[in-house]
Image 1: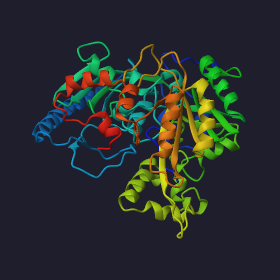
Image 2 (image 1 turned 30 degrees about the vertical axis):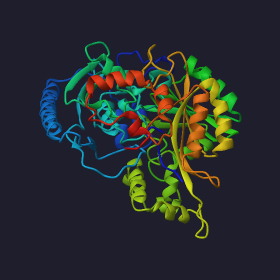
Image 3 (image 1 turned 120 degrees about the vertical axis):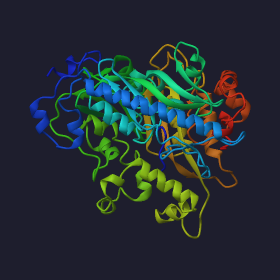
Image 4 (image 1 turned 30 degrees about the horizontal axis):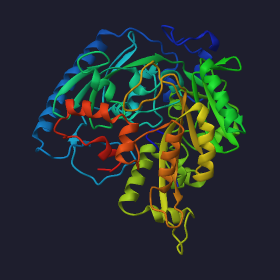
Length: 517
């Protein structure tokens, strides 16, 4: 997942096209079926309508507040002593490069949706806005971001500077590809407006995968797409990784399966011979709705059901409730424990805080003992293997064979990605003509006798490079400097860094992502 989890971790459906000007209304019957909850209320029967004068006035007031917040942030940045480290004081994080707490710039005033334009299908959003808040604001207009990363508290700015993927990425690419413009606080203390074509296009194209080392996105304008109220899921089983990847390539190319349109695709590998592709399709009606926000667990349903239906909101957050499958580390997948936990605590950000607390106070080994991973007599060292990597679809089966044999973590998440446009993004140079598969795995594994921390991660890094893949940098990396800059376009990075942060007030990408500074 991106960022990842921790584990011990009234037209018919076929008549709808994404280019339609408005999503169709849900039928009255569909509104009566299933749960009557706020998620359904957000999306059922909503059409894209022109904004009212009151909405325009609200947008103007929000823009004024944003300008005030920007001026205050600039003053705070200018007041930092020369050479002082620059960090953001954020209330959420989904990174797995843990550092000691330190003071940071207060960006709490940059966490709102400034404006949703249903006619233009765009949203004007502050950079620290969580996708949870962004989705709620856009669903109210019958729209959604083109790519919604899996975890509620991932921020829009974080997804753009650090990459993000989800099951719409086979047709919509990565989050930064739907950005129209960005307002960025640069390392040299300027605020620049970066667009695809313009004075700061070098920063616009260099920003993805820079992880806050070139600047911080304070405001972004992004594209939106229309939705329908429900998503129909089909869980298609496979017994062989090569067969699964061949089917995935065909489905992504044709955007249909068995004559039914496919709007979303991801997959789960429970082992070398048990894989599933989950195909999602927008629909107007649902015979019944499943609820995986309480006692039932989504990832288990993949093995148990062939067809399922969720509201759009529940579909977008299907992985958040149990942090994919990693909530098992905290025992909350046990029925008797789960009944005692209020729904509001079944969230990825709660689990992340527990992990951060445990790491800080040395509680992880005790937690492992409670789960039976180690005994009091013997506590072998374990290595964190928390990564997302992208492989060409025709090399993914080979990687999975290696991974099951050498690493042994399961389940594994699979998500196809094809860049939306025919251009490369220099700091994460995926080939626009290639379908990639994001492979996500988040757990710990025992170190072999005599091996040091990083042994398994380095095996993975070497294999990914061998197979012409790429690795996301949200977690720990072990590359040497020369290799790192060869993989992540060091020449381009240094040119952009020199332009927008010549004094190096922000961390260097290698220092941040490999050295953990």
